[in-house]
Amino acid sequence: MIHIKVDPNIIPAEVLKAAQHAAESLEKEPEENRTDFIKKRSHIWSAFKESLRVMSHGKCWYSEARESQSFMAVDHFRPKNAAKRSETEEDKPGYQWLAFDWANYRLAADCSNTATWSDTGTLDGKNEWFPLLGGSPKATWAERCVSDEKPLLIDPTNEEDVRLVDVAEDGLIVPTKSTVGTAAYRVKESARILGLNHGRIKEARVRKMREINEWLNVLEDLAVLGQSLPPDRADLLPVAKVEELVRSACRPESEFSLAARKTVESRYPALLR
Image 1 (cartoon, rainbow, N blue to C red):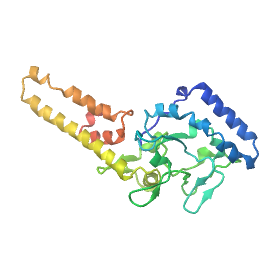
Image 2 (image 1 turned 90 degrees about the vertical axis):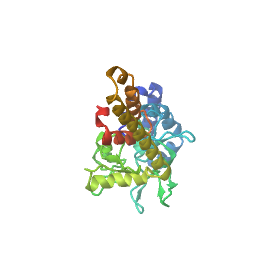
Image 3 (image 1 turned 30 degrees about the vertical axis):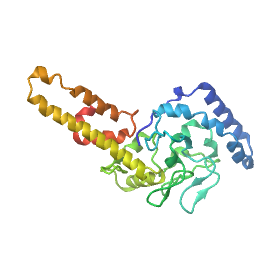
Image 4 (image 1 turned 180 degrees about the vertical axis):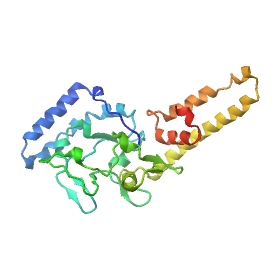
């Protein structure tokens, strides 16, 4: 997971206008009609999908994966009709007043957005999960104190949140070495709930890290060779090209860029300056 810089300027004006109109209309609906009102207007948030895709360079906001054989979904970070807090606690309705608020949308791949049996035998996937930390205020339709809540889930639009996230050598999403206590618990639970450590995606990160290490090995070999050559011949070595390949893999538009960056930081941090 990396920080997603949201940009309302990317969103077409007519899409924003339709969402605003739906939100204003929802406010006028009696409580017993709101769920049906929201369900019948899924096209409102679906219209944001392309803009969200542009913001993340086509990647899932949670996993950094691209989906080539399935569709991305527009996830409501705060669930719209039910908010599951634990295995035994669920708030109905959820955050209905945010159903048409684009700032509550996240582009999500299937394994992060939908309940899926993992290769470890657990049922993962965000679905309606939105746990809060102990002692957190809880926003309601009448008391919309969203900014006071303390979510358990790591939010890709929150730069401070994503700074807590690291990638281990085996491809697992883990807390950074200096992340402890509640912050570390948030990372571990987020990885579980969002399906970030499923076998296939973990292996995809490992492949990315292996690829980066191979390029770094090439750089080392070129450096050794260059030292044995006259300057004019050493100048012809493709050092700059290989360095650019490494830097490119670390940029936000590249798949699994966090795994790439962590690999480079451990061996050649100067390449990322």
